[in-house]
Image 1: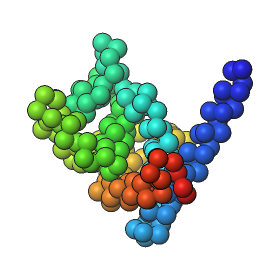
Image 2 (image 1 turned 90 degrees about the horizontal axis):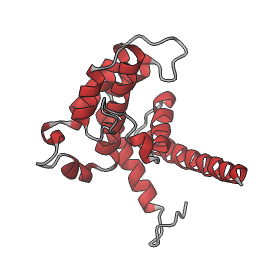
Image 3 (image 1 turned 135 degrees about the vertical axis):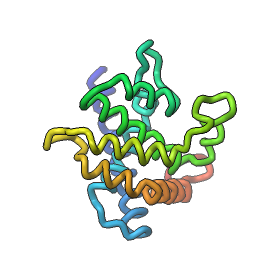
Image 4 (image 1 turned 180 degrees about the vertical axis):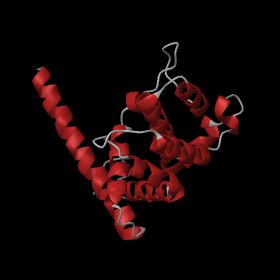
Length: 182
């Protein structure tokens, strides 16, 4: 039975990968004229990774609790060194890009008066986090090259806009019952 669940999960993952790859390529290549395939693939991969809440909130604080706010992630990055620090900063960039691009209307709740993120600019912190991550030495076989992280920092706003276009496309392709018509 476990094999069937893994096979089903793999099939769903491949379907999500194709779905987000198609939307990302259309939004970035066709609508925005962005020919940076590596960047577009990264955005597509980010969407697939963040379909899982565990991945969206994967950074843990020293007390073991999940860091769900940018301020706590930034504090956690200060406790890390080397590649671990790079990964936390990369995650801050991904997290802020995800919310800024796909769900900007949710920022009001994420940055509410009772939240530690109330004075945080997700755009500024995302750009800064990607830039810091790009400056931490990684080996040449790193999953995400430093130059890509640097481009994500420089083009953060354009990537956020591209994510909004992706959302528009998938919402336009959804039926009234939420089913996908594409």
